[in-house]
Length: 409
Image (tube, rainbow, N blue to C red):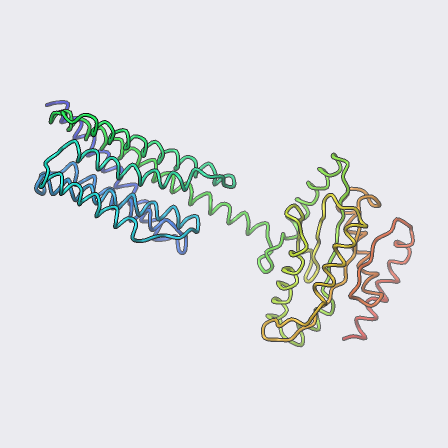
């Protein structure tokens, strides 16, 4: 009698703890805004907690009715949690799935209560249904992901996996032993109840970790990327480019830096407005990205200036890339913000074979080549050379570029 009382007291304490975790999830979901998954987890955790409370408080309703409703609520809760995991990952959410699972388990329990009274079959049905639902969530989470979100995925997915395996073992044990006594059934039910509630605490913590890490990643991305174009901002471009250049230097590989500048951008802003100018910059970035590889770096260096770092390519090969970008931008008139705009770019090219693997030296050389491209009429690509002529003629080129700009305006 004392053991039963201790089990009941522990189960009640765990229900109170899981209820507290549910309240935390509800509060997080309430303030999450558009964060996907949290509201599903809050509702699923609430349904699961109600099922657990109903399971240990079977005196509130008829014994069989309590078991049926409790199993249905727990199945519904795990199903909604599975929907939350899919929503968090941006996958589709089949809304009918949890409802079908809840109706199935309630129908099975009703059959094995009122038509064929079979306690072992009831235990096996509940364990199998809940186990499959837990394994569905584990399958969604135990996948490759970016750090640090991967740790939260695997922590939560591991708990779901252990819960699913435990529930399936419970179902197999119940199905294989049809001669279970009432005491055996009650003991197995208590053990399952405690295991599910402990897993529920872990799952709630895992969901909070997943949301926390995603928020951290979003904030990190905001701090590293330009808000308008989605390219790296100047500080982040500087840091990442220096790391890439150091790696290529150690491996004895070349790298080339392109500085891309939109021609007559001030005229576009003055004629069509700054919103159209912003759309033009986004359009330019999309054109550049069509000619990038996965390990290339693209950053916004100034107002309409972008820097593209091409590791592994020498200047002659990168010259072809720069020419393809120039042609792609200037090939035809685009409709941007309901305006027909013909855009062109000037590109300066500087390679490590000439200027070394120093980012500042490459930027200075590419900027000088860009200045030459502007001075020679724009809509062209110029490559930086190693001669001292660049430094000697740099001032003259800038004056000529400014003179042409003033004439155009």
